[in-house]
Length: 178
Ligand SMILES: Cc1cc2nc3c(=O)[nH]c(=O)nc-3n(C[C@H](O)[C@H](O)[C@H](O)COP(=O)(O)O)c2cc1C
Image 1: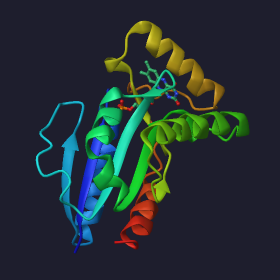
Image 2: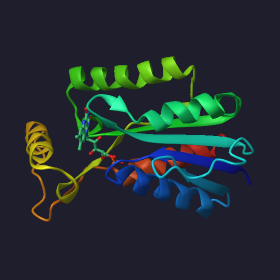
Image 3: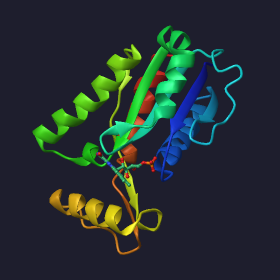
């Protein structure tokens, strides 16, 4: 049994869902998981006392939330010394266009370079669009991006692009390192 820290930053709440999903799957494998919601400013006491770390964060306008950078500044030494994974969450992760995929990889690699962190896994996860959480301009832009990728926004107002089965595979690969 390993102690796994999952720290995440989430603006519209989808990375939070992903973090909780990963936590449940690790707990199913009898690992002990602690979740820290960085966006909510949750306490970090004892955050260095674990065996492995997963850091998840969504991309907005080409950037990750500043809370992720701050967390890595405070806890980088512990994160770097254990098994670790980075889960960038974005719409582009659902794209098959090689140029978009390359641009997405560059955003993630730049973030990791600046944080001085080389995780064992970088698992890009396709996110979701929650219409109600967006203003008109954001909604229009994101719907048009989805249509460019042949994804029709769902009438319900929630379009989830996450490949949950692939995420479960990732959990299996990560758990194999623990
Ligand atoms: C204002 C805004 C900007 C976004 N910018 C990007 C972007 O630059 N690249 C991308 O791939 N996805 C982008 N997205 C999509 C988000 O990464 C996606 O909706 C993700 O699921 C959000 O996760 P969260 O709910 O945890 O914040 C953007 C979404 C919004 C609302």
